[in-house]
Length: 204
Image (cartoon, rainbow, N blue to C red):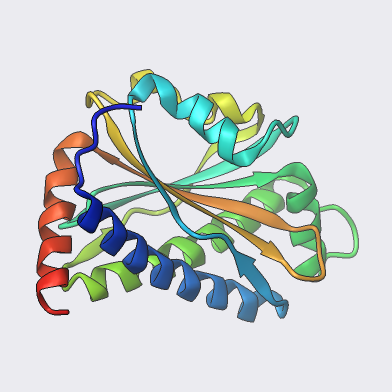
């Protein structure tokens, strides 16, 4: 881990903001899948680029293969969101969406893109609203298909000295489906989110 770039109060406030955002994302996906969704407490870390892969593997677990969708966000909040799905979750998602047989790869990817768009939009939209800032989104795209969690993101892709890493996992109460929503913000953006959090705390 690197030196902390957010103070303890800023981190606690950001965790509260993220928790509300993640909760809204969970409610949105629960409505689509008609299942109750549990989610973890958001985890906030500061990591070096070369630690991102091992950090993802640590939070996702040593599952054999995962698929991942990435979606960039921009505005006063800038970075990249990743939603990571195990292969069993990909198959179950298709079942939950009404497919009787395993979908072809193109259809499976489309399902993952759609679910990611809902999760990221709900979570980051809520966070931006709470922080009274703006956020926009690029279209989601497949980042990885059936790879080890450790290589979903390669450290050399991020030029900053460190990154803010926020993660929460979602799982269904009566199903094995689960996924992880991870947000990465480069070092130069951490000061901006720190300022937004400071303004948020001044109002409470």
